[in-house]
Length: 85
Figure 1: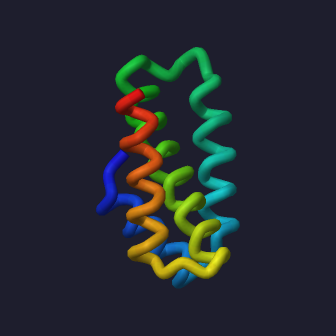
Figure 2 (figure 1 turned 135 degrees about the horizontal axis):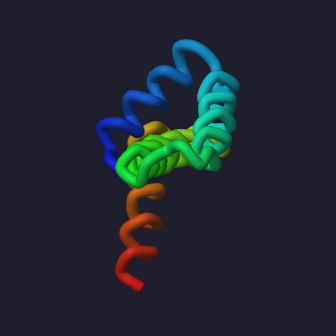
Figure 3 (figure 1 turned 45 degrees about the vertical axis):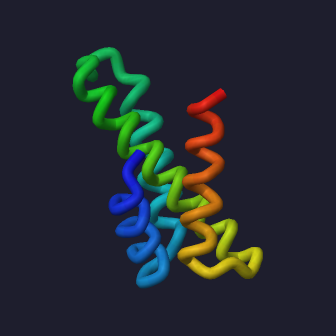
């Protein structure tokens, strides 16, 4: 999970619509279930999905009234907290 990628996806959502990202998530999840996808490709798909889910979570926090900076910080603190335990 990379913060610059999450920020970029977040900017895309603000300029366009969250539905595009949700549809891309559905597509990538479906693609990951294919038997023809190699392990290396699954790793890339997984990284893309984690960044997309991160951006969607940041959007949820922003809808609750947090600024983008606050939402990003809160999300990353939760991620780091889950890694430490």
